Length: 225
Length: 225
DNA sequence: CTATAATAATAGTAAAACTATCATAAATAA
DNA sequence: TTATTTATGATAGTTTTACTATTATTATAG
Image (tube, rainbow over all chains, first blue to last red; front, side, top):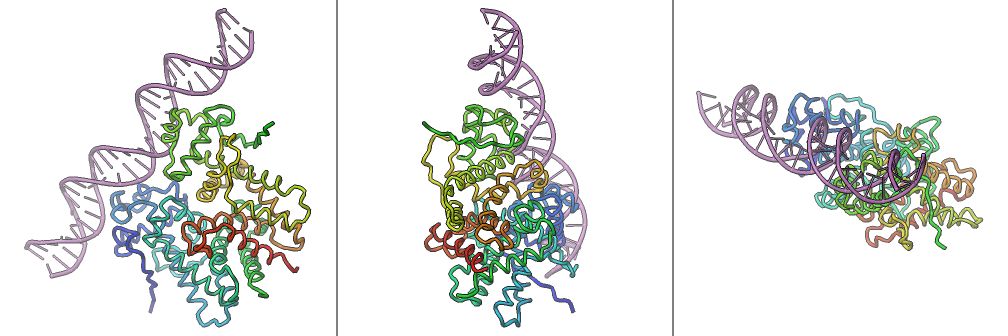
């Protein structure tokens, strides 16, 4: 038996549910490929349509514009990651070990074992690193937030924040530390690969070093209080 | 006597030096106003030209495109900030106090005392918070980096990293901690104001709390080694 | 077999992102 | 002083992006 993980998506993110049809699934699959390959700036619905073998108008029946599609992909990613975390930290009692696992999951490049899904998690992970912040770094962030577009990100941050509080109930900044870990897991990766002098990992380019850095950062902050 | 601070800009960032003419200075001044007001996505050279009272073609004589202009503004900002830091930490012997000062400067919204400059540092600071990462989160980051467009950012990071190493010579991640502080000084500010549940400062929205968080983060990391 | 829903095919518009040309005014060099 | 360079202004045009609208075709559910 194969279990298919279904992530409940905010309905205001799309016009027609992309998970409900082959065309929709193709839109998700090929947009991940295209954005991964050429970046979000040069990504257009025209190119996407050509890639899929449909028409521009066809895409517009699913997504209002490419910003909504990016927000959809990021929301999907955060939802997926929260599931990964709850799955992999299940039955772990020690909050410290839990938090270490979380950091590892955040900073590790995803492997694509299951090819059943129409979303390539590994490429999506790279997209989130390079384009993820563009989902909220806009003038519409307030409206988008009112429509709960960032709920999956905020939920994940809350989960991580709670584990931090479990580790160290008196620590004063669990939320901010959580968002710092999440952002830095990605930014240090981007820097390491593109602007290496902003990190201490330019030589080896090993993600294990990012994990070590984040562990050091977090656990010295939480220790001895 | 009035001292005018001149920041040496990378010549590959512009076609004609905007600091060399009134039109050029107007381009800088009004682009800061426009991007601050409506965000980088909706910013166009057409609107900018109308704002200034010149033509689109006129702008293109100074900047190849709006990406280069954004990179110019961010480079200017990092250069300016490095000067602020070297100015305000001059004559401070204790690296700890120095680092505290740095964090304060990074996280504090700039006041515009001097109206002499054609760049409004306070608005520019807000632009860097909301749009700054878009300068490097692109597919061209490699080429841009080869052309040294991010040198001011990397220099600043090196300065902060060196202070960190002064505080704690054995600390293993001075560069990464430096880039973490710099990014988080901005991101936590953006989150606090736009996605407050990603921080612990949603209630008060005081930047002093961001400073306290960063101080805590940094100095527990550096203490006792 | 019919109704209806999704998609394909085609066409079109407005704005964005440029490029090109020429006239004019101001600065400067001969 | 005139001649010449240089910056700007005015105008026009191209290609691409971001969308909207219309109609025809195909698949499928009842």
